[in-house]
Amino acid sequence: SAVISQKPSRDICQRGTSLTIQCQVDSQVTMMFWYRQQPGQSLTLIATANQGSEATYESGFVIDKFPISRPNLTFSTLTVSNMSPEDSSIYLCSVESREQGGTLSSYEQYFGPGTRLTVT
Amino acid sequence: GESVGLHLPTLSVQEGDNSIINCAYSNSASDYFIWYKQESGKGPQFIIDIRSNMDKRQGQRVTVLLNKTVKHLSLQIAATQPGDSAVYFCAENMDTGRRALTFGSGTRLQVQP
Image (tube, rainbow over all chains, first blue to last red; front, top):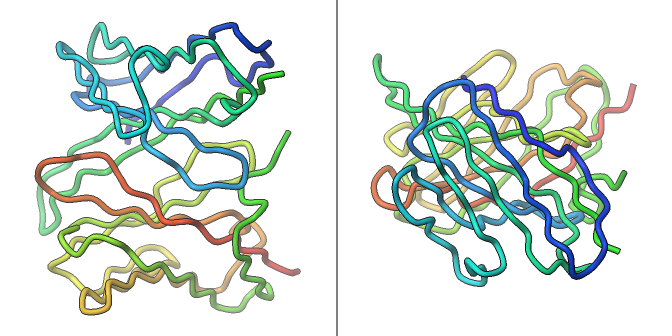
């Protein structure tokens, strides 16, 4: 399985400011994803980030608000721009680890520890 | 810090009992399913997965059952331990096309000693 780290682990930010979250993986992966988990909620996909192409955003999320970089196969950043209290969430990156062989060809996805953001 | 799963349905079991966590998935075209465990302050941890050409898969103390007819997934945990206390999510995706996961709403498992 892939080992994923995120920085910062948590932050408290003032409204109107921006925060860039970093995601580092210990192996090269093609597909990386950014999710948001609001308090007491499940995970919602923000965007898919593949190296060498523009990120693909889900409905309700736009590049101006959540710009993403994917400069190489082990690293990605998500920026939360012009923050408001409604952006207070846990932000998680995940990667797809493709394993083949045997009777089960799986595309397991592993998650980082998350970045807990509070906007005041 | 704030806990994950404050507003989620809760399953409370006694230590040593078996637990069954259920999930109804949404997309009949989904062909790959994963169960995740999320402890407070941590990211989701992969537990077990299953493909749509199977109806049962077993791991260490865990079994996943898939009923495609009614789009239902369950996670069975044998001899539940206090360390199993967490929020459990099912997730689905399709083998081709969109690779990101769609998550269920989650269930909080509380293990009573």
